[in-house]
Amino acid sequence: MPFSDGARSGHHPGVRSAYEHVVRRNPDEPEFQQAVLEVLDSLSPALSRHSEYADQRILERLCEPERQVIFRVPWRDDQGNVHVNRGFRVEFNSALGPYKGGLRFHPSVNLGVIKFLGFEQIFKNALTGMSIGGGKGGSDFDPKGRSDNEIERFCQSFMTELHRHLGEHTDVPAGDIGVGGREIGYLFGQYRRLANRWEAGVITGKGLEWGGSRVRTEATGYGNVLFTQRMLERSGRSLDGRRVVVSGSGNVAIYSVEKAQQLGATVVACSDSGGYVVDEKGIDLDLLKQIKEVERARISEYAERRGDARYVEGGNVWDVPCDVALPSATQNELDAASARTLVRNGVLAVAEGANMPTTPEAVQVLREAGVLFAPGKAANAGGVATSVLEMRQNARRTSWSFEHAEAELAEVMTGIHDRCEEAAERYGAPGDYVLGANVAGFERVAGAMLAQGLI
Ligand code: NAP
Image 1 (cartoon, rainbow, N blue to C red):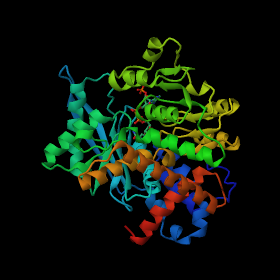
Image 2: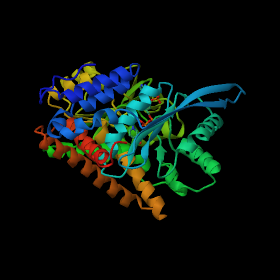
Image 3: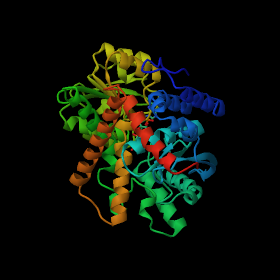
Image 4: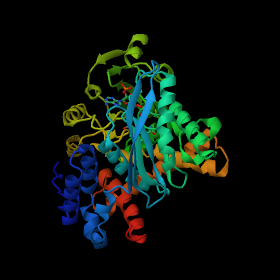
């Protein structure tokens, strides 16, 4: 995978050699290599200004996880058959605080995917301004079509190994693809049983009655839309009256739809891995929640129950014209051809609700066309930030109102936006949120690593 043209300042030799080192040492991990390249591509100006980063091999140290745990997860299905899955936890960097990052249950999970997510998480968490390091975990278990009992048994088996690596001052997981409120409940229950401690701060995304925070469920989607709103405002525009397309129909997608509608936009399409629905009158949020959160059914159901909507099986949701695109499903779901379609249809802004949903080639197309682009590590950081707010409430044994938690989230998102904006301006690239996010996140982690010595 090549570096971009490096038109901004050419590439610092330390950046190039760190990337080659990563490719050599992690040959079968294309997603991890892609995530590293995306960050390093922005860092040459920072390395040129600060020779200590290269002298102390900060990039090489950042790209090597502090610890990686891979384990067996045996479990029994409802018919009595035994299955064996693989579990992962990559504890990437704890210079700023305990490892923090979600768990993903999806058949596409492997070590390289978890490393890409954990690497991203370091910079995302740094951008929040909070005291959290970066980590990520999960399993290649496929929850689709599994009964409640099977999910419970799998979660219990998974936590039976994972629990020895966790702790509120060590490593604090949360949800991600395939891990929502139900799974967090089973995971926390098993942790509590094994540890014989009520340690609420050991996992986030908990139920409201047992240590959860209001707005945690909504936080990633809400945060992404709040970031988009601020980005549009800075260029003299707003979300009000805009046509929005959201990909996916999971946690991030649903609450992106909700906040976009609250801010006056019309969300005309969303999707799942089977296809997409278009609803020109605007997505009916209650129906979407009923189908996805309650019934856990396919998005095709939406069109079956709502007369005016149509379902396109296997189609590409980015074919639907829009002003604002919010990719909120999975990595590399928006490629260069889709980006060109969006540009042709007049898109103004793209903000990543998912992690690395836009391919590097697609990002290039959008940038060249002058489209505002918000990278996931900044735009979708509202989820992890609200997880920290949950830990804060746990530590104080208190529980905030929805309004209070949402106001805190809004303040965090403004802070993240402005940190990116400020860093981009400082390095002579105003409006470049990719550079701004990477540099601002990097500077904070690198500073802590330098101060803490060679560890
Ligand atoms: P989720 O609730 O499990 O929903 C995932 C959605 O994406 C589903 O609609 C799913 O469709 C679709 N999807 C997943 N894999 C796909 C694939 N290979 N092709 C097409 N569609 C696919 O997960 P989520 O929590 O919303 O997470 C979505 C994205 O946001 C991920 O990239 C995640 O890392 C990122 N993120 C999440 C959070 C959070 O707080 N949850 C925070 C930051 C970032 P099917 O049901 O058909 O699979």
